[in-house]
Image 1 (cartoon, protein in one colour):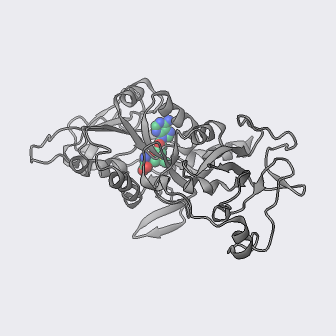
Image 2 (tube, rainbow, N blue to C red):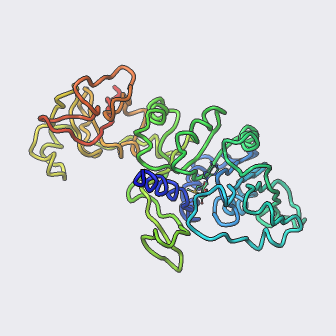
Image 3 (cartoon, rainbow, N blue to C red):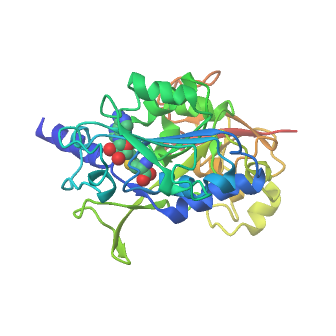
Amino acid sequence: MANENLKQAKKAKNDEFYTQWCDIEKEIMAYIEYNPDVFRDKTILLPCDDPEWSNFTKFFAQNFENFGLKKLISTSYAYESKNINAPYQISLFEEQAPHFDIDKTKIKGKIFTLDHDTNQNGVIDIEDLEWQYLEGDGDFRSDEVKKLRDEADIIITNPPFSLFREFIAWIFDAKKKFITIANKNCVTYKEIFKQIKNNKMWSGRTEWSGGLWFETMDKNNVDKVVNGVNLKNVSSVWFTNLEHGRRHQPLQLMTMADNIKHSKHKEVRGHEYQKYDNYDAIEVPYTDAIPSDYDGVMGVPISFLDKYCPEQFKMLGIMNTGEENKGIRYPNTPHGRPIINGREIYLRILIKRKT
Ligand SMILES: C[S@@+](CC[C@H](N)C(=O)[O-])C[C@H]1O[C@@H](n2cnc3c(N)ncnc32)[C@H](O)[C@@H]1O
């Protein structure tokens, strides 16, 4: 039980990571490069944000005119509802506002909106942001935040990883466009994999290698400090259902014979591709070792999703747990993972070349 509590606390703490400006800029500018009007006349909602401390709201407020936004809304989650390992800090922005309320500051969420030049200085930017306390704590599942979701065209955030399944369901329920950060392992959740497999969501523009570095307020959980900022590396990636160019660039691949002759990977060079004991597919241990001329089913690592071009490959399923993957069952695998020569290996995604 004590162990369980510890696990829960660890999990909850993992929700408090703040996205760096440079990572937001790199990802978001890629959508603009692909389609300069992607955000034009759109209402963008940034839920699960903390606009006073985090960068999504600042980034979009500063680019309000550049992107041609119609309206920006962001909501924050109340301090007392968070499982945060950092003391409460009121921002000057809140404290100096005429409607600052000491009874609400810790227990209510906030809503920040931007849609016109409130200070009439000729530009709409962060200085024009207006805010109010929400009725509740800003939980994205609450009716008041749901209403904001329904009003929005695009939802963008780094949500709490511990609630990621619910968060994605919340977006899909309302059929919204989105850009979000997620833990890499979320692809193994049945509900998430289904959306990826059906091409309803895909990897964002930023490449997967190395995970993302987040700002953290938890001084006991820091991987490195850069310019006085505490950073934590989390194995996380961007997901979206907005188009970006990289998704349609086919992988440049060698034939099976050339891989066996020339692959840089010693597991591939000089060996035949192995077949699984428990499924009729070949094992491909690296995405760049996918043979260009193999027509059967292939098992590839999850990092393949970063390079997945739907015009090049069809995604069939995932060899993971015993979860149902339409049309594919693994009767001999207790955990559904691929087995080679009696040995279970790491989960694999099953793909087939499109002809
Ligand atoms: C990973 S952090 C990211 C914060 C910010 N969006 C950013 O990227 O810098 C997720 C935030 O969601 C908040 N959160 C946790 N549960 C929530 C809920 N049910 N509804 C809304 N926000 C929640 C956490 O307190 C945390 O601040």
